[in-house]
Image (tube, rainbow, N blue to C red; front, side):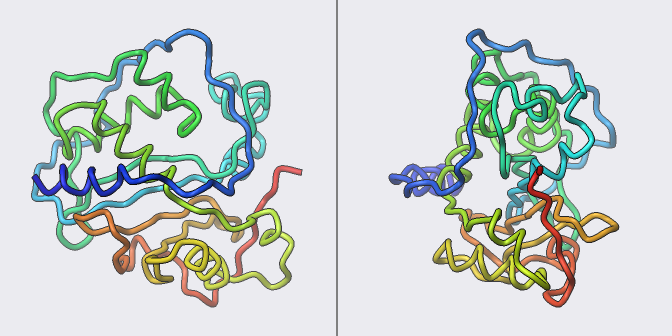
Length: 233
């Protein structure tokens, strides 16, 4: 019931988007890859959610000619900034439910509709099987909620941020919070690689899908940490 109420809240008209990247949907529905669990089943009460957003230029760095990631990285079907890695349910503390039993699978049309939000059919199928199955009853609802959350975000100019001297994790968090009223810096987690390049942003939400303080694991580096942003140039 709470998920349904939150879903209605999300269905309000979205603000104009500021992430100026391009994407073309494939003409035909996509096949749905078979997914095998990569860990144990864990069922537990859901206490909140994480929307994990991958910075595509960094992910595609060195993968431009990868057949497995051609849609996201080749440039032939679009150029991407942030894309949705996944919408994840959280449990208590630093634990989370995963791989909940379900006989439902996403259909090809549903996968196709998501390919400008998450340009990888295998990743979409994996996220439903591992995470969505522990949240809602159908993949259609899971992906619709995911897309509404993503489409309601406003984006700072990350190309400009990438050129800022002495950029820190705190600068990135504050820029995103300023662009999205209702979000605070402590609800914006970051994932950096070993050289300090931005890999992901992880938005921490309560059960009502509103921003809430991240746990230490989800928050990531301290505000003082240096950050670099690859622009794909």
